[in-house]
Length: 135
Image (cartoon, rainbow, N blue to C red; front, side):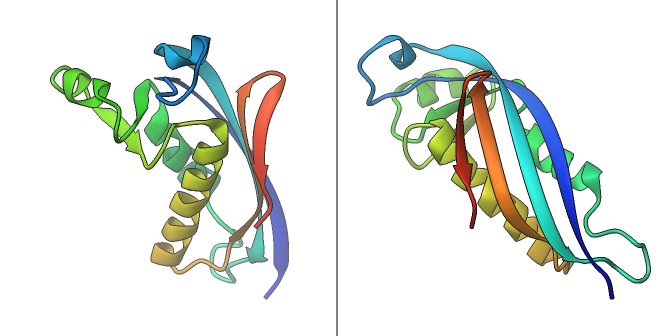
């Protein structure tokens, strides 16, 4: 078996607000989020693929055109009457979203029986601001 490293970039549009923040970000607003994922592991002898790039894209795009709110945000009940709301265990900052996405990708790899592991993950909230994890 051959080891390999891959990189995938995915963007999505979503709104959020920070419930526990004093300032403009306490109001519902949107971003063009950008996610960068580096992975490594053993390439499948059968497919020649470490992980399907489309699988990574599909995981990240679950956030596309969604509202992301703290599960304790009183706005969740209101908005849920009209559309789906993604809730997070805390304010949906780039720091929290990077850990949420890491778990989602890791869980999907385990479900699929893939050896692929995330080695670095960045969530860009704006062109000059990102949060990063290197598990």
